[in-house]
Length: 496
Image (cartoon, rainbow, N blue to C red; front, side):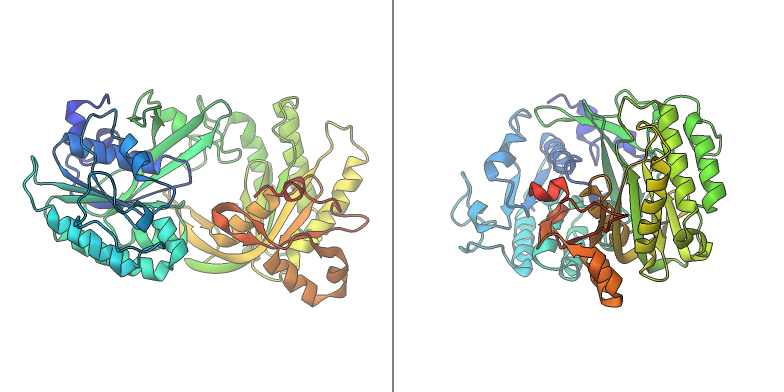
């Protein structure tokens, strides 16, 4: 492994790129990011560097997907000993080379350990690490808390993380990474992040031929640090490379299309960066909808009824950028002309541009997302009848009701995020052109309200498993002049 010697003594991998202070404190950090972003690989790098530095190292495995053999392979290229491996599952408990009386051996049962059992085993293992090492330091990785939350509850895991944090902080020279699948702001990240010393955040973007990964120290309570995104890559042998090909300007992202801004931006306001060709579109959108960044909402949780839409085929390379922008502008104008949108006061709705479309959250009346969908489809049909095929607009729509969190982003702008808007996006993603798809909660509410909704809203599956194993009962709304009566291709194929 090509890790420079000076990196071995640092508290976290890539510290000199991620941390703007001079001395990173002994910390228990929460490492978060979406699936596949590199969290486990980063945890392994953290342990490899600890082993090379002579630290005592412990890995707590809470996932059935990682075997001891796979875990050991992360350390083959480093030519170090394998750290101690503690599994929450009996089938992985007694590994090669462990003694039958090993303190990490788990009672013979086939299911997951209880939380109290797991905490006890961690405590026993940490106590056994009082033996001298080169540095008298200990590194701990707990991976993955997401699996424990799925088996138990966030309240139980919250209590356990608090207990484990106290246990680790009682030991001088002990640092730790708790690994969680999630993107801030989200309930799990917010709750668990408040219990530890800081949060390291990862993100990833599919660029077609390659995956771009970035990370940053989002917050750290015990030191001053300016969060900044740093690119990294994962090599075939599992090693991480951070801070290479560093280009701070490339970290800017367009507020309309979310694409990276490589050159000159059209706005010098750091809170309003745009591609030059997106700025005029954004200004027109602002004229139609008013402010899209600041809402008159109190911090906390609000319930909203979400309409999530995007333009189908907008990224088709056969379309020029000019035609792509024209389609977005035309869609904006059509939505703005719908009564279900235009007659609702600005303080009763949330509008978030998403690049290919937008999310609109109505804080009143659960009928509004459905009414807007029907009105918009009728207007799009009339619009398309007068257009050539390359100018016609095809859209897919997802509807959902649920809570969102009113938060402030890193630039202190007010924003919203949470289960309500996330599920609306996932529902929309299952649709094809013309579909108006509804999550079960909003569909069943509407069906109970009026006969017209009973006639037009039809359940199309018994249970569709989406991301993170969530089971979704999906409905489709259609009639002779709106919606799409065909089964969505992904549902028809059973692609979960």
